[in-house]
Length: 416
Image 1 (tube, rainbow, N blue to C red):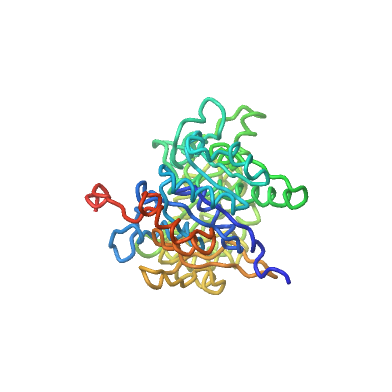
Image 2 (cartoon, rainbow, N blue to C red; image 1 turned 135 degrees about the vertical axis):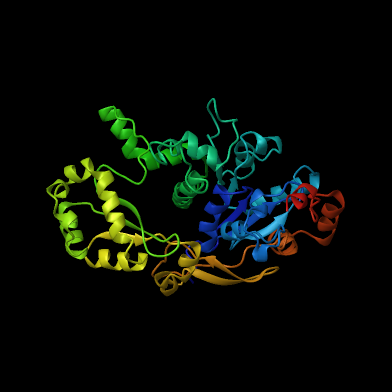
């Protein structure tokens, strides 16, 4: 009998936290892997206290950020600084096919849970480590978050306008690049193990995976000696190319004229206003040379219409264009609704919530999405049913503090 889900039967012990690790494991969970998310009340995952909170009420189970990143996994809470907590961690590792961690290099080794220690017990393990700068090298011990990764990888320097300071992109950009590479690497490792029986250590440096998205700019420098600088929304190969104001409060539409054919189509769609016939705009070189004036004229035209009207007119003419959507727009987007992108899930504390679905669909296999866990929500199930712990084992771990049950977080309460 074939498995219902593509990754059904794959077991994951996820010791990672905050962004990249949990997002990577979410991919595996969506396609049927059983992912056990390890947390501790004594050192809370930062994502649990990131805004927004459901109904504006703060709480460790109420973060929309955490819910989006950690849905479809089982949640347990242990303290690996206690012998019984460390014992549970080892039980979980022996059960797992994949171990994931995102601590500063050396942290897992302090607990005796590093790859070299684990592979002695389970040589077929696939052990995934993701950190800012990787496990080795002069910067390996430097901890960091995605906003630092975005800066050192070069994104911040090229984001913004030429007459302004560097402007970081919204969110920790490298955090959203890295999981794509990581998931592919883990799947490749699983395939290799299926064929050879051998495990391996996957060492991801988020800094390096982020740089992959700047490959053309790096090539331009190595071949032509050009250093890319901040240039707002403009690119060398198109004009007009930008985000233009439309009717309404803070409404905009992005337009890309990528060829002279596009420019002719724009002229016709715009009703051939006099300025579009000016010879200085007839070629890309001319439009680039007079781009400030051109952008101002295009903005004057788009301001007469709603963003949706501009989008429809441009797309009907074969021109790349799109409304700059707010989160409200996205949630109400007709295409996303048709695709079933937002999923209604029933959360233990929050009740019904909407979560983004998997980022792709498989024609012959369903996904396996369910609500994110409250802190320690699946302790009893995982300890008893997954790891086979006895009542005495569990009681001893509670008494020892190896299983955490409560968080004293005065500094977090004070922040809200």
